[in-house]
Length: 85
Image (cartoon, rainbow, N blue to C red; front, side, top):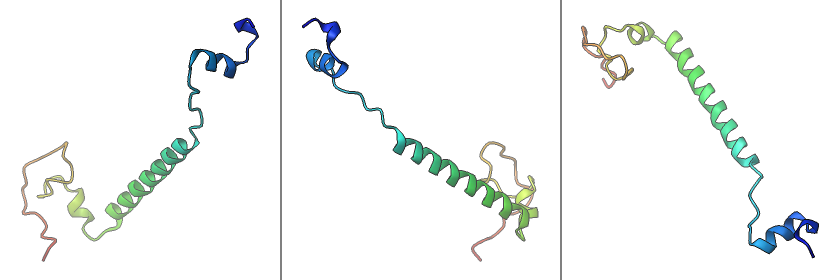
């Protein structure tokens, strides 16, 4: 039988080609879930930074809040807020 008359699965079996995985639904569900979770966490963080009693401190770049933003590090002009006591 000539190879051009074979179906694709028969052609793949003839040359030892394994079928490719094509169902990526769980991957897309996982990406969607992580995206939604990330958006929710960013929104909660934004809401808490605007409405919290220490929001003035966290939004002031001259506080001792050196680890909140690792990109824009400035020297502290004020002692860090003591959150443990």
